[in-house]
Length: 42
Image (tube, rainbow, N blue to C red; front, side, top):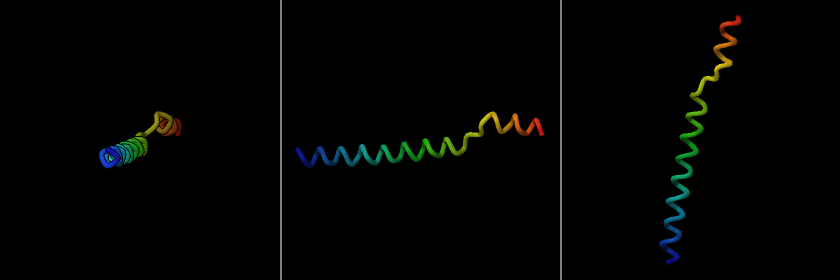
């Protein structure tokens, strides 16, 4: 039972890491509207 629980926790941890990396990539790729507003004002 302990081995199954540890394997499940390891899988969950790995999936969490992948999700965080994906969210950080999405946030980095996002261009905020303020960027375009500043470009128009220049």
